Structure formats: C-alpha cells, structure tokens
Length: 65
View 1 (spheres, rainbow, N blue to C red):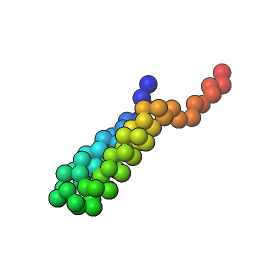
View 2 (view 1 turned 180 degrees about the vertical axis):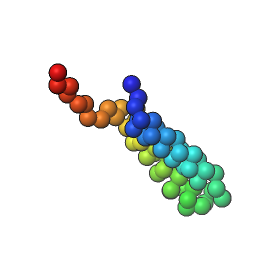
View 3 (view 1 turned 120 degrees about the vertical axis):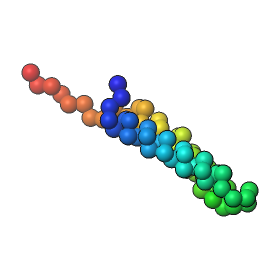
View 4 (view 1 turned 30 degrees about the vertical axis):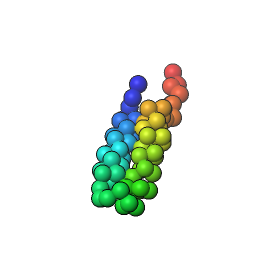
C-alpha cells in the first residue's frame, strides 16, 4: 500500500520528468541544457526517484501486545 512518503516521492519524480522534458525542448539542438542536463534529469527521475517511490516501504514498527 502506498503511504504519504511514497506519494511524495512519486510526485517529485513526475515534477522532475516535467522539468526534464521542458529542458529538452528548449533552444536549438546544440544547447548544452538540452544535450546534457535534460537527459540527466530524466534518467534520475525514471531510474531513481520513481522506483524509490514505488518500492520504498519505510520502517515497520513492531506492535507489542
């Protein structure tokens, strides 16, 4: 089940995707932002942040009865 931390991580990943695609669409094809920064942002979003948001479970607290 997704909790609040998972939703926040996925939202950050989606925000990074939007920023990455906006950077990719800027300026001419030889723009350093669209050639280096945008692909790095997209890789971090797709390969790190969104999978962390899906797979992160956090600490489980043992219930003492």
